[in-house]
Structure formats: C-alpha cells, structure tokens
Image 1 (cartoon, rainbow, N blue to C red):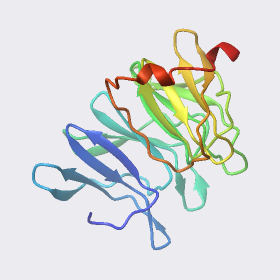
Image 2 (cartoon, rainbow, N blue to C red):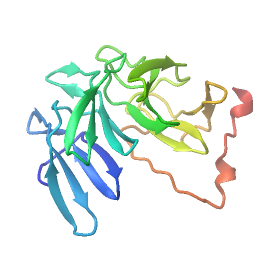
Image 3 (cartoon, rainbow, N blue to C red):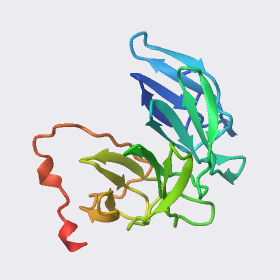
Length: 214
C-alpha cells in the first residue's frame, strides 16, 4: 500500500479492495487507496473528509460507507460515503450514537451499526440507516455485550460475532424484529476477521442450536 495503516477500514467494491483511514505514527489518516487485482497495483483515491481509525465500513447501493471511529481523542458519529464514479466523499446524516470498534453491515437496503465503544462504556444500542430517507433509527438492542465485534449476513440474518468480554454470538431476524443468541464461540476473540463461505455442505450442523432456549 502507499501508506502504513493499522486499525483501518476495508471494503470490496466492483472487484477492487479499498483500504481507508487507519492509524500510523501517532496520527489518524484520512487517505484512502484501492487495490486492482488484475494489475496487482494500489492507487490512491480521494481522501476522506475526516481522518479516522477504528471505524467500520460497508458497501451499500454501489457506494462505500465509512462510519464512526476515533479522531483526535474523540469518538465520532459522522458517516461519509464514497462514490467510485465521481471519486468523491460526501457526508450523510450522522449516527445517533458515536461509536468505535463496532460492526457495520448492509442488510435489506439499509446500513446497520452494531455495538462498539463510546468512550465511557460499551453498552450501545443498535441502529440502522435508511439511505432513501437519510435517517438513522434505533432497533432492538443486541442480547450480547460486545465491542471489537464483526458482523456478517448469512441466511437472510445479521450475525454479530466476537468481542473481548464473552464467547457469545447473536443474529438479528428482521421478520421477528429481535435478536437470538446462537452457539458460543470456542474461544474469546476480538478484533477478529470474518467472512461468509457460500454453499457449505454441512452448514446445518452449525445452525442455531440454542435458539429454542432463548
């Protein structure tokens, strides 16, 4: 990459990998860059409007959203969006809660912000952003206490995974509008990485084993 980065945000859009912001040499970064898999090259794109680390990124409607994070000792609630067609960042309505070290995922045409840290505690509500209305609204709280988590969508549900305080995971069912706890992780994990692998032949072996007890 063009910059050394830790605690950065990463997203995949149109077959390219984007690395944004982060922390290096006691400074938060606003710079961003894109990796082209075909040419095996990184190129700089327009910098974000705010230098930030420990934020979260997700792709929604063919654009990259970067939300929250830390900057100059502050926990941010600001959200900015990158349009690859114009190479520009623009702000949208900020989150209800400032948060860092949280999960962010696109689901059913909205952006969901899950958990995180707000400077004095890790007890944060979950909220979602509707791009058609440019508004954030709260949804039911997660039934796990967690930050430094990751979020993924599988089987039309949002999974919140990991955190330093427990081994729990949970999923959000939009039809029931509630969270369910699922089988615990084997180990405590935070600042982890996650991905979804489609068409696993034995996926049912891991499916919501404890749901009937919730």
